[in-house]
Length: 275
Image (tube, rainbow, N blue to C red; front, side):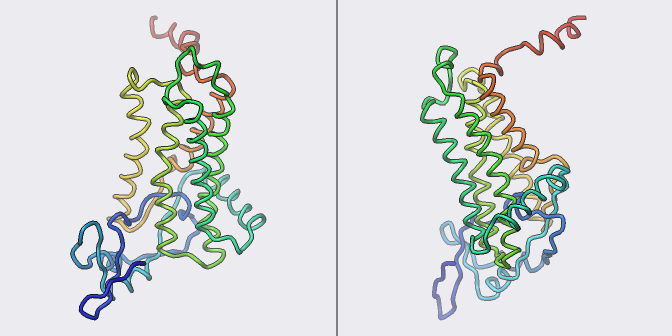
């Protein structure tokens, strides 16, 4: 944490971007974390902002250290599959010496490498029908695998923090900050995997990119005012990432042009639409 001396009173400086964000990692139905909304408001009602930073006085800094996350993930996939898998990986495969932030960083790096790999083969970020045969399909498989690995690591870091008793507001901020960065990599990779053309599929591309961010922002906004993050029974970090991985695997197996075909519509839905 940055500090600054002013009139012999230390002022603690944090970026204005440090408000809490949505994430599935710290969300655990068995979490015993609690938070007093009044304490939260005190911690963030510090001195007026200077440039892009808020300066906390001693009382605000003390309240910041008392922050405890409170949330719950109601997704059945998370409760019965993803959370037990993450717990197994933490308890059986992860040494206690591994920092939770390291787990978070590794997950983000995997998504960045998936994006960089696809960008290397598709620098224009769009695939024409003539180019499809020249694009190796394994890049879509790697994107799907990276998403699943990111999802698992994202669930692991909070459990590792509780296991090693190293949970902290800074760790939560780092974790959720990684989650705030990740959607753009996944969204662009989905656009390429479906052979969407931004010039012709503008609104669809817009929805793929900004749809996840709209949900992300809404959940963050809700948490800011309620002091807790309740993930619905179907949500982005669980079903969303899994669906995105499946999409990538389908593109790897059948080719991205599959998403431009109307075979299923013609075979199953068109007869009913014209009846």
